Image (cartoon, rainbow, N blue to C red):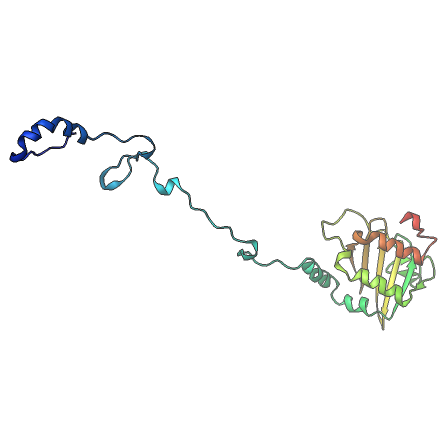
Length: 225
C-alpha cells in the first residue's frame, strides 16, 4: 500500500525528480520480531484463537492465615472427653470423689452361685480375703486415676470379657460403689444401685497394676504387672 504524494505547481519539477525516492521511503513494511502484536478485528478485539488478557494471566490469590479462617474453633484437647466422662459417672462422681472410706478386696473372677452367702459376696463376686483399708494417700492416688479422662481409652470397645480379680469399695454414708478390676483386659466396672458400667483403663494399666501390688504384693507381684 502506497501513500499519495501531492506535488504543488511551484515545486513540480523538484517533485518529479525526487518522487521515486520519496515513495520508496514512505512505503509501509510489516513489523516483525519481539514488537509484533496480535492482529485486531473490529473494535480492537483479538482474532479467534488468541488468548485474552484475562485468560493469559491468572490473578494471584492472597493466602489467608489459618488463624483467620472461617472454620469454627475447636474444643481444647480432652475437653469433650472430660464432659463424656462426667456424663458416664453421673451421680457416681461425688461418691467416688468424696468417699469416707475405701476398701480393697480380692475376689473370684466368676459370679458366685446361690450357695455363697450375701455377706461373702461383693457386687455378685465371691470375696476371697479380708479387705484392706486404704490409707488417705492411697485413696487420693486411686481417685486421681478414676477421675482423669486421660486414664480411659476412648476408641472402639475391645472384645474382652470382664474377669475381675480385685475390687475397691467406696463408701459414703449409706451409699457405696464397687469398682471391679479386670487386670487381664484392663477393664474396670462400676457397680452402683444394681447396674454395672464398664470402661477401658489401658492407658494407665501399668500404674493400676503397680497400685494393686502395693495392696496385695503376693497376689499381684510386681514382675507380672
